[in-house]
Length: 298
Image 1 (cartoon, rainbow, N blue to C red):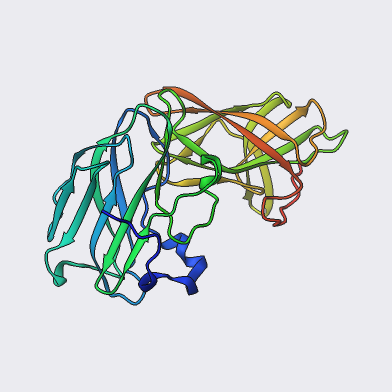
Image 2: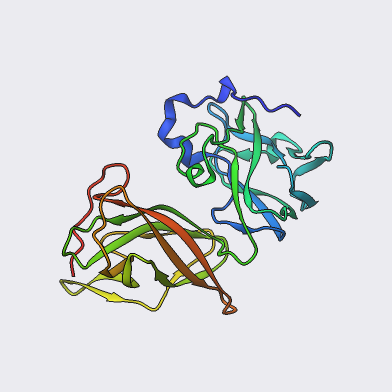
């Protein structure tokens, strides 16, 4: 099957900011290498100028082993095992097509490769009018992939090594600290592939590191250390100024803008299994993108 790089009938050039919100993709959060994986492709719109999605074709990435395609009422699935393989769902009639104002999921099951990395599933969406080829892959590293803005991104899945925390941290940063300043905050978005709990943090840059929350109690903003922070599966939890955040205390040296600081996050799942994630957090005066942030005081 040939995937066109761009379809003029569904170019969506006039709706640039909305494209990132409207793409056909997988639930966010990593999966573990070598494990079974249920890929649920979310479709919540038709092509531009169209009224319904009539077919969806997924090109399987190399290393992914297809095992099953659950039946979908009113649709026929076709599997092509040549090359890396494709799965195609086709509506049995116009009445069974997915209306553009409705959301649905197209599901296939398989086995993930044994190696960690990033998988991209290219998806061709066919509508009653035109097509949309969700096949663009970022040119940078996997760490940059979640932040690169593409018009027609392929569905992305981060695959982590067994034993590693199935969590992706994006937009991480530490607030700069001047000489004499003993504490600062750390911020990011965390997205887990399974239900987890953030239970600890450590860094060689600080003598003490904790997970904190700030919240209003009456008309007073109060801050306290917490024993953990729940991370529901496939949902982003933001650590930000004025809310949940990391607190680095007894700083061992000033933190100047432009530095990279290693931070280790510790997690625990429902069975009590522990895992860690090491990130390199840049030191900034304000969040990436230039937005200002509230002062962090205690």
